[in-house]
Image 1 (cartoon, one colour):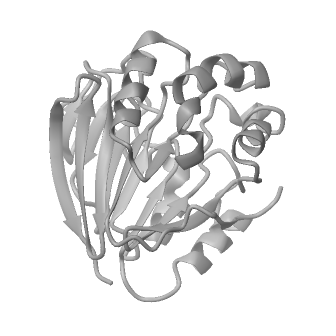
Image 2 (tube, one colour):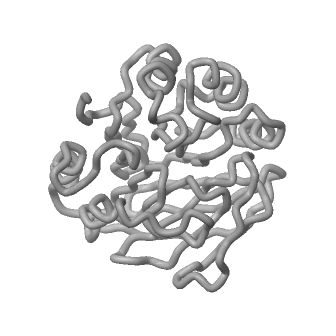
Image 3 (tube, helix red, strand yellow):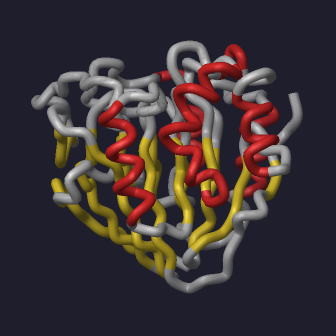
Length: 261
């Protein structure tokens, strides 16, 4: 498998808006309404947090992903989900190569709004001896914490899938070097209290049903398991503000973090 790389989405704009959501590429009505909400906001970048149903084949990208998020292809930086990764060569890889006219590495980085953004891959090898982890460590070299990482399966979650213990090596590498982690996989919206200096946000309420939350889960600061919505982020050097927004445009929860440059 090819290793990681830089992504041509990098921008030196000092202020930027990005939206992020996963688990909505099923071609359904709710997903289309949410995607239209994101498109109307005219973001600088859109992060798709993974899952094209049911198996991420080329035909499912054409019938399930493209009608929902295809209009955002020019500003999209994706990460693969567990549903599409087994067929990534003919589905995920081929779709993004055609949609963007460039190869998207399985994990990569770019800069936006004064932050370094890291697209990691929870479905590719990420253990202590993996190429991905070696690459990540090299990307984290240097001072500061103004880094945001995103991938599909969350390390910690109050949702049905729960904590993903195998993700521990990625989380450990980010400890003390990043401030935000974004995930999907659980079909709900979550903000977890900081752990190791990192605020984890789950935005998997993209339209493909809901998963109930465990309200007694430690460190669950905000949760919504009944509405479809996405995450809106405003980035600037040294700070980021975020809000969970439903498909009708209502803000469900918000917060902010500061980082060390």
